[in-house]
Image (cartoon, rainbow, N blue to C red):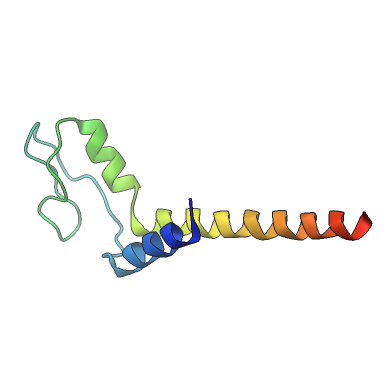
Length: 85
């Protein structure tokens, strides 16, 4: 994932309704309710509704923070390796 894609995803997550997002019900082929929203998408399976409610802004921002933490750690370790060489 490029930094540009991460930045775009962060902006989308920050601009979204923070939640909590929950699956309130499910009608096959119609959709499900999420806090404050009648339906977030038309989908065909209950598993899709579970995914949509789980992939909420807070979860996306946590994933981005973890990517940045691991990337920083990798870069620091690479710098140590270059200094030792």
